[in-house]
Every structure is written in structure tokens, then in C-alpha cells.
Length: 288
Image (tube, rainbow, N blue to C red):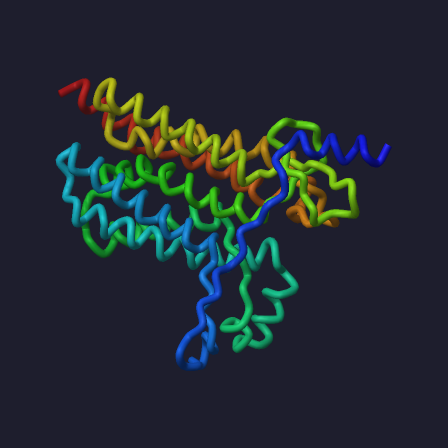
């Protein structure tokens, strides 16, 4: 029976995990010590940021927008996104550690709270409005470029999640499950990997965006509406596949993960952008 279960696990994606690359330093530094650790997750996220910014710049160029202003907006969105993503992850997912940091702020420099994807999204939205306030420029056309480029960056960001398997799911016999070695003892049970599923879905969104953009020019703000409406509902249902909190899965609030509550809010954001910004512009264009 044991051999049969072990053979069953071999039918799925075998367990792997990319570890950090430790590079010895010639001198010891106060924060780094004598070793520089390069994390695969960080490398892939940085690659995603650069790729997303490049795609947004190309989109801006095709639509006769200022590419420098577009890059500036990306910077605002990324910086505020990482800040809010970091602290919101502490607030909603790592509450005990977060409270310890509030009691002793010096721990902030030695403790990693993680990153919340939706915290990053909402932080990016905040950064866009800060950019608009400071630059006194029209936001919607440039935000449209950023939203077009975001799935390209998100593909690599979620790839980073997949190679370190930081989103374990429930036990399953689905063909794309990962035989996760972190839970229990042999034979290891295959589990959903939410990072992998979002890599696949990001690729599908990229294909959709490219197809839509090359068929005809879309209304200004179109991708600001479409992105949350195609991503958030799928993310809402994917989170039902997450492992229970006792197995390393996300905490639940009233039966839903923080990401599921955020998905509901993000759908509302997409609909609000359509109603308040995109639809009126289309009506003005039709009447002129």
C-alpha cells in the first residue's frame, strides 16, 4: 500500500525548491555579515518589475504618451506597493510578529514580514494618486499603460512564489499538484500550488491583453477596468484551494482569506473606474 501511494505521488510535479545563493564577501558588513544571500524569489520579482515597466513604456510609446512620465508613475506605484504590501502582510498574516515590531521598532531591521500581493496592488493605486497629486498630470492614460504592463511583471512575481512554494494548497489528485515534502511523512501528498496556478493564469491574461491591443485601439482606461475584473474573481475562487491555517495556509477572517476580501474590493475598484472615469470619457467621445 505504501509503495502504491508513493508511486501515485510520482505522477505529479516532483518536489523542488530553489534555495538562496550565498556569495562570500571579502569583508564583513554590519547588515550583510560576511555573506551575500541572493534569493531566487527576489531575483524573479525584480525581473518582473523591470519587464512590467518596459512593457508599460512600450505601450505608452505606441499610444503617444510621455514615456518618462510613465516610468515615473511605475516607480511611484512600485515603491508604495512594496511598502503597503509589506506592512499589510504583517497586519493580516503575521499579526504576532507585527505586534512585536510595534512594541520594539528595532526588530523591523531584523524581521521579514513577507509581502501581500493585494497590499501591493492597493499600495500601487495609492502611489498612482500620489503621482497625480505631485505631477499635476492626467492619471488615467498613464495608469492604463501600467495596468497593461502589470501582468507581464506578475508572471515573474508569481514564478518567484512557485519556485519557493510559499502558497501551499489542499491535498489533491489534480495533475498539476506538487508532491510537497513539507507536510507529514512519506508517502508525501500532492497539493495544489497557488503560485503555479497564477503563473499559468498570468500567461493567459497576457495573451488576452496582447490579442485585444492588436485588434484595435481600446478606450483610455480600458485596462484599468479589465485587469481587476479578470484577475480578482479568479483569485477569489483559487483561494478556496489554499491549505488550512494549521497546515501553513492563510489565516481566515469570517471564513475567507484576506485575499478573498480584497478580491471583492478590487472588483468594486474596477467597476468604479468604469463608471466614474472610462464610461464618461467614452460618452464624451461619442457626442463630439
